Image (cartoon, rainbow, N blue to C red; front, side, top):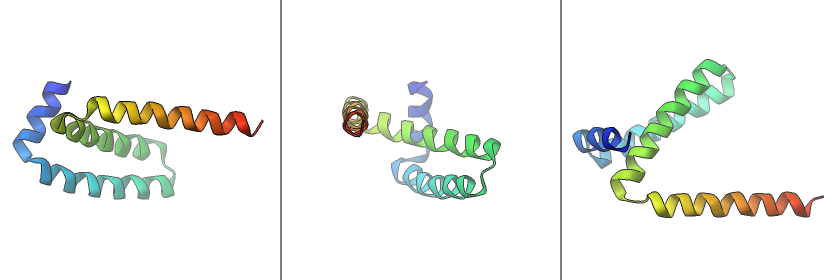
Length: 83
């Protein structure tokens, strides 16, 4: 899958895909407000694809997933503290 994401972002370029991500995030926000599950799923898939393209293209996989893990642990700590 990463090879396919690399192929797409190399074709369009980083700037273009960042612009697309901005618009995709707007579309996702609108879908969330409307509350239609099918549209939310479609927009989430588009956002995830663009995020993955940028993460892979930039070589940020390790950093992003480390930060993601750290954020999850922090959230779980906050949950534990409220009990």
